[in-house]
Length: 330
Length: 286
Image (cartoon, rainbow over all chains, first blue to last red; front, side, top):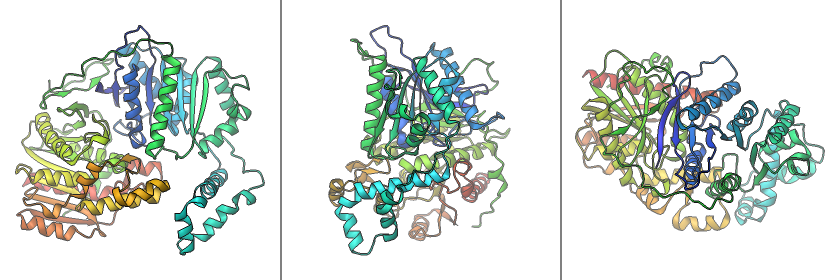
């Protein structure tokens, strides 16, 4: 394992885990990959997804960094007087600056789930060093009315596509254990919702479409992943219209890939869904940056195992003068 | 023994990380965060925090962070760490076993003493972490104080609760469900549950310990916990001085209903955390 604890940022208060990419025989320079917090979940990600993804990409040769924004996980409290979203973009750029200083990285891929997806998108729009983003179930502000509609739609789909064919559901219904009102409402939904769904009222939808066009024009590779039925997919379609389903037909480049995954929820709880997600990510990373590469990663001995009384001190961004009395044992 | 809880400690602890040292340590490459004392006076005893696993680990992470910061703010050198295959530590969750995790607790204690230069050690365990520290403590006699926060007392009951939570949140495919009575669900709320781990967990029984886990034990748990009185009696029978705090607070691994801010600030666990701080302060003075 090549993981290393790091402290960086203007106050050296951002805590992260740096994984160096496995050495490659070819001279290919790969972008570094940065994982952005999914909501309030710290840098390991929901169900430890970020850890698995980061180590998988590191084994392919990508340097990866997963860190906590201020006010999340182990990082220090928020100190900037800006909106949370803006601070996320600023700190993402600090992460890129940090990797540039210590590893000489000049290009980056940002991966984020939920709010992390939005930050990845916004940071890519703000910084040309970003050459790829993987927004997973990301969305902007959605009207409550539409959120309620989407929840009912999801429930209806469950009853018509799964529960209807499941003997356990019939047993519950026949033995009086079902919530009949909920079941009936869900079964009637396709009829009662014949009128158009409540408007999603996205936050600045035109700007989202324009921003995505700009990313595509600058050859930023986009892998947008959505769980089937996720609100993020509604938002994506509302923002982009026809382009959401047929990006290439609308003039988008081959740099945009959209994957809708079934049988999972917002955070990919089922293990099978997690495996599929990692597979999709691996496929995309390989096809985008490792295609036509005959070289494979070299097998190198693992990191020296250290005796239990010795620890690996954290890598601290040395941009500022060293603090007095940091007291790190040698 | 009554515990005098000082509410102000938890509420006003600064969340500054100017004094934390994240690192990997041990043969197992465990990830931990060492919190040196952030006061001029360093207490003579250090504290190890042992987290739960799986979804409970993720949802209580912030609480454990804040407790560590609170302890360091009061002069206790503190180390919190992730078990093997959990969090940022090395290893895959699929390879986890109770024996490996018990070894992690021992490694954590050794590391804490090396970092802090302190021999006097207290341990705080949350949920499965509490069961692990109790089991580890019963195999040694050098842990002077131990807090068991919402401890897992009986592994079979714990597994049953985990399976029930998983079923309530996830619809298991029919074929997998048919296999469940024979081998149990192979996954729990987004994490794999291998047969060896399920078997290990089912054998946990703190009431069967034959040595006291520590000379002084604080048990913090909910009013609905059924086996805690038996646990108190058992540990007292083994010669430990036991204090029990019953709390009506929502447990730290339960998602707060008020959203992101409460998840970050964890206001619902302040009473329990303050009680733990107060008890450790009293122990250290003794």
